Image (tube, rainbow, N blue to C red; front, side, top):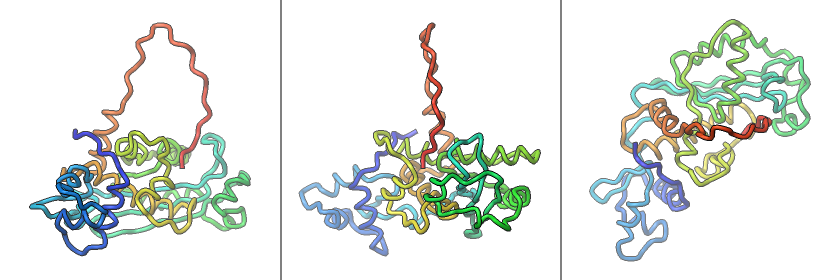
Length: 278
């Protein structure tokens, strides 16, 4: 697999500049747009553009001008949950949002979920969701039945799948059902694109890629942002390779699996409280 490409301010500026054009432009033109005018600037720029750019015959275009996302008829559903508190064991889902994209276009899913647990005051301030908004919402079983149909045949894209996907799988298990969808975690993609960056939360990535946010910390809008960020990360890593998002993610996670320690007498590890990265 190709070496991961590091996202830089240059790539961000170049992407915004090229997005303002309606067709491919010469490398020299893009170089001028990003403030490069020195000799050999075009060659220097070409060597630093990430996989979202396609360079042919000294012309540079954006991959998504000529390539669809997702590829190979892959169906993708980006999903986000809001829950009563930050504990993955003792909490309930209070909102589900999802965006499905395939060759037929885009569909969206949103539902509140009633809960017998109180909503943490911090969660109320962060999301704007209160108990009154959950009154009259369909029961969790009914909502999951509709969601199961919405997820059919799709690759599930989640930011921080260790929280949202695990919580969703737990609720399906209560009904005697499984969550069979393959899961792509955008944190894993971001780790490959941004190996030196410590913060890879959804808000950080949305700023890096200039993805607009209408209602931060609401499930449907966060699902929309997750999908947009996943597209940037996919093209950054895949380039011209014809891979599905799942294939790309599988390759990355295999290469990121840490080796087991060889110390025969390792020190006991302190138990860490789960932390949700948003």
